[in-house]
Image 1: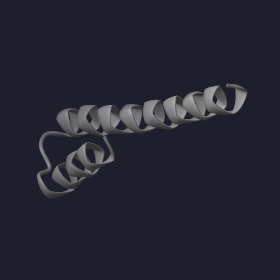
Image 2: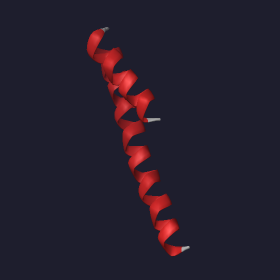
Image 3: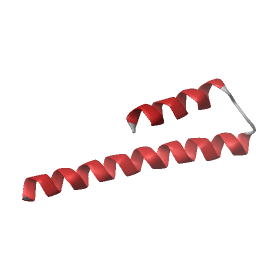
Length: 50
């Protein structure tokens, strides 16, 4: 998952498409990062409780 996010961010930095497309790609990357952080915290909490 982290490798994919890094790959997307790297491509976003190298190839600069139209402003809208760039924002969409950046938004998806940020959303994926936030989702990964939230999922990680949830799984950690489950592990502690269990």
